[in-house]
Length: 258
Image: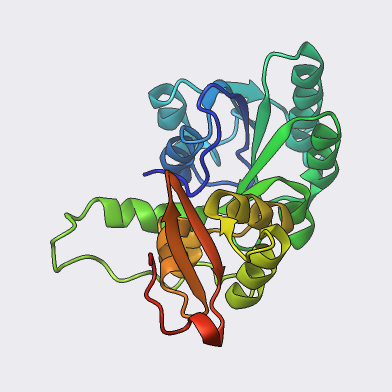
């Protein structure tokens, strides 16, 4: 499965997993998603591995070559995992061996960490559940809902022509943005004097304005197919580039791609 974005595959990513807040069932889909953004060269999972609560994680650590980081819960009710993850992230930042960070958590306590990493010029991906507070979702460059990844993994197990393709589960996150408003603003902000903008530029604007924008939340794997379905937009091919503009009444009779 390819992401709707197309970052450089040579980007080295540090994947830091808060096992207190993420189920082990998501990790396969998480790593597959991150492989479309770059190469996860650091993979660490944080938690108290002396407890039984994280038992489901241990097979996944071996299967995916993830390094467990032990953090004892010294005080009841306090999350020591957060502190260990943050300290490691800052160490990795100063070592300078990665270009991006992936914070796998739904905990808003990592909001300041995300902004600090971005202040230092690092790209930050967030991956968490739909309950993730908006503060963390907006603090990263791109946020991916784990429910969407699980839904896509289920669909990928069914052949494209199989009529038994599963229906979307009810736990899929609702889109967090108004699609028409977001696309219209993105096209207006990036278009030239002739009204046309490249699809790639529109996508970049969307990811900056809405870190949790994802075409999969609207039933599409790619931004291009999502745009093609919008009646208020028209597209065309200009060499190797896809272009898009707002469809005016004057142009409404023209077919897409003309």
